[in-house]
Image (cartoon, rainbow, N blue to C red; front, side, top):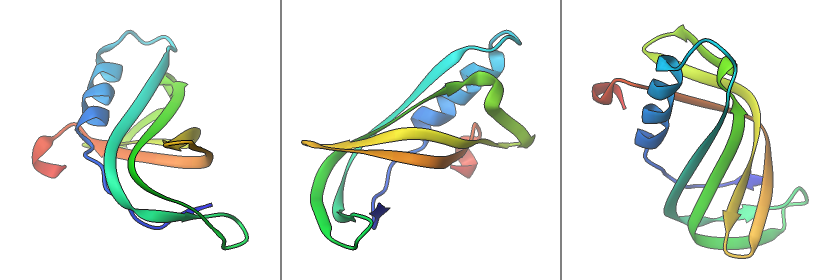
Length: 107
């Protein structure tokens, strides 16, 4: 699957990562949810048009111990799986890396 184009504000993820770093040192499940609107198309593996979309939701469930702070002030969560939903379309997104910063000046 290829998502050709969309944009989304990273503020929600920045806040979630800030909370993850202030939590205790044990592993906890955390859900990242991004919602927004966009214009674009999604192609299946064979290059066929699957859908056009306007509003969407991206959802990722992972473990707080997987947050990589080694590039602070940027933080990454590597190789996680999530879902993309737009209307009746739901697609699995494998091997995703989420990168963000808790510094609003760098967003």
